[in-house]
Every structure is written in structure tokens, then in C-alpha cells.
Image 1 (cartoon, rainbow, N blue to C red):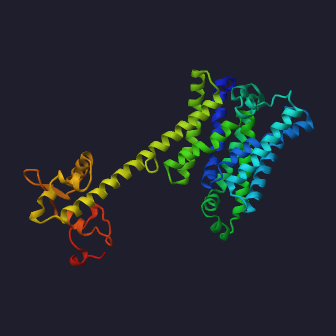
Image 2 (image 1 turned 120 degrees about the vertical axis):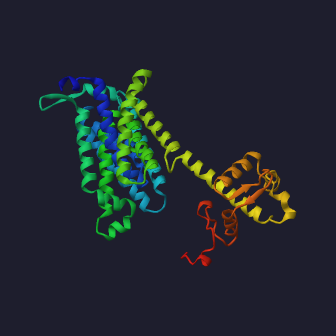
Image 3 (image 1 turned 60 degrees about the vertical axis):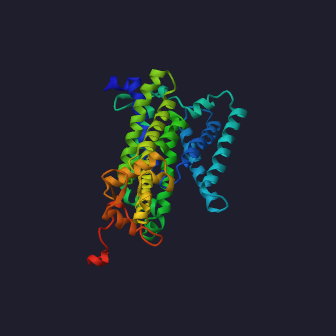
Length: 394
């Protein structure tokens, strides 16, 4: 056990996983509430609290710095809510007004009054996760990195909050008015969630920096959001993406000799990109396939209407496969795809010589149900006969 806690690589991975899971679980509810960018505001604005408390105690390692950071995060949340409730600007604009002002004020104070203090942009934005294993404390006789202890407590706090108030969180997140009618106090839940977000940001900020904090809060939940519509699965996928990003990001950073925190954040982006492309329902590929299928189905409807309007012997040329490209303005490739699917679905058949397209009963029924006032029935569900004649209920 002692050797495990003395392994810097293991400690960095564990810390990254703890921060990732702790942030991403809260991030799920922030994403669903459309307040995810508030984490970016908190992660930057807490620097002002650190600076102000540092001026008061003149000790860069004082635990009061974290208290000041937490208070600054809460001030950011409150100011954003106040500006938003004024109805003069929208929420995203309120965030854009608050956190740049607080962050700029903090940077200005550092440059003017504390230029010799190690609070530079690199430490603030990127963090140094690889150094945290060397800042240790003793727990039950075992020397453990302080950051792991802090973030383990934060993770337990967040898990307890979600587990105890899961139903209330779910109702308040999706329908605040209904939650209020049930007496669930959605405002209290909202501010408790944002308060935990602020505290978690402070604990993670001290260990890994703002960029990785924001990445873990937003990107794994966003990737999970694309994969599922069920809240428990979204929480699970978000946590798994965060852990995987910490592990993969560390080894890639070591192999490429780059920032560990930056690489972990980059890997979360890879997971988001993969979900954006390959999600089974909401992914770009799935939507493209659905769009293509709908276009082909619409083309098949157009085909059967064209054929039913040219059934007489004099219009035999209109029923030739080659006529489709000129009369319906289809490319040769589109015509071939539409004909192939129409044949497969039993809407049309070809004549023995292959030079004429003949409607089947299914294709004729579909054509008769496609019109300005009629329903656009799916080819697979088109009726073989009129429901009024068959006596079946609609």
C-alpha cells in the first residue's frame, strides 16, 4: 500500500480520475440545465478570491486561500444570477460579463501588487498535476498526496448529494415548475448544485488547473449526452469517459513529452468527437444515414406516383428506367439506388426484358395514398387495401 502511494505515475492517474469523476458527475446536471459554461466562469473567477486572501494572510500555502477561492466562486454564481434575473441580458451574456471582469481584476492585482508571487498564467490555466504527488500528508499512518485526500472527500460529497437527492435533482432539472408545485424547492437544489460546483472547482483547481477542470465539467457529460437519453446511463458514461481520459491522457503525455493536464483535456475532446460522429441516435453518421434513408424513401414515393400517372400504353416511354433521369431529374446513381430499393421493398418489378418498370399492388397502394392531403406512408407500412373496404379500424 505504501509503495502504491509513493508511485508518482499512479498518483497522477488516480488524482486525474478523482477530479474527472467528481467534476463530470456534477457536469451532467449542468449540461442538462444549460449552465455548463458557468464552470468556466467559476474556474477563472476563483483566482480573485485566492489573490485577495493572499494579500490578507501573505502566505501562499495557507488553507484560507481555498476558502477565498470558494467564496469567489459563490460570488460569481450569485452575480450571474442577479444579472440574469434583471432580464436585461441572457444567461450566457451574464456569464460573459461577470467572469472576465473578476478574472481580469485578479490578474491586474497580481501584476501590480504581487508580481514576485508564483501565480502566473501557466500555473493558473494549465496547473501542474504531475507535482501534486509530492505535496503529501499522513492519513492513518500512510503518506498520501493532499490533493487526493481533498478530491476524494469532494467526490464522496458529490456522490452523496446525487444519491440522496437523485429524484429531486431529476425533477428540478427537467421541470423546475413541476418541482416547485411538488414542494421540492428547486431554487435550493439549484444553488446547492452550484455551490458544490464552486467547491469542487476550487479543490480541483488547486490540483490540476482551470483548463482541465472545465474540460472535465463539460466534455465527458456532453459526450455521454450524445450516447443516451437515460440519466443514470449518462452519469455512468460521463464518469467512465473521465477515468479513461485520465489514464489515456497520462500515458500519451509521457510518450509525447507534453503537459499531462493538457493531454487529459485533449483526450476528453477525442471522446466527444467520437460520440459526435458515432452516437447511435444523435451522432453525425447516424443522422446522415437517417437523412439519406428519408431522401430515398421520398424518391420512391415520387417514383410510384410517376408510374401510376403513366399507366396507359401510350406512356410506355415514361416507364423506362432511362426516362427517370430526364423526367425526374435524377442522376444515374440516384436512379439506380431508388430502383434497387423500390424493387427490394416490393414497390415495383421490372419487365422480363428489363426495359419497363411495373407497379406492384403495394406500390400502387402507396401511390394512391401520397398526395397534397393524404399521408406520406412508409413503403413498408403502406396498406394492401383501403381500410374502409377491409373493415379494419384506423
